[in-house]
Amino acid sequence: MGKAVNKSKEVDAYIATRPPDTQRALEELRSCIWKAAPGVSELMNYNIPAFALVVGGKRDKQIMIAGYAQHVGFYPNPDVIDAFADQLTGYKLAKGSIQFPLSKPIPKALVVKMVKYRLSQVQK
Image (tube, rainbow, N blue to C red; front, side):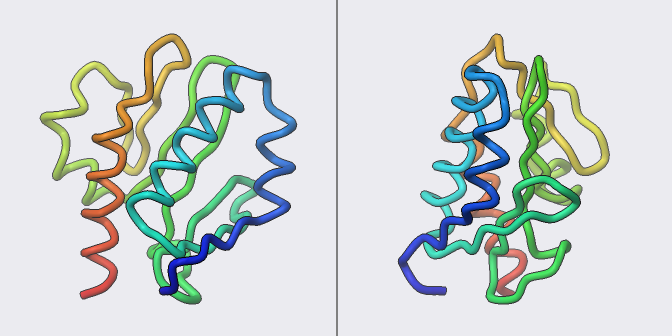
């Protein structure tokens, strides 16, 4: 993919509808994704922001984020969560999601590593 970030007005609008603390956390996740995967394409999928890691990438080649009242959801892929499980202690995990509480800083360096890991998987 190219180096230009393909920002989505729909993603901007989604973030703008969230409370200020949630907006801040979503923008931090968004920035981490851009840092790890320059040229990512933004879109809305399942009514939440999604980031296609490859041109035309469908759900299995996307990372998604979502904002809630007390946390932000990060949806990298179950394989990513398994690979980084030892670094995710203290966070609520599900098969394909991680909840980052708004009361704690986003672990930006870890998010960047997870996105790079997923990007390497989908580019094989």
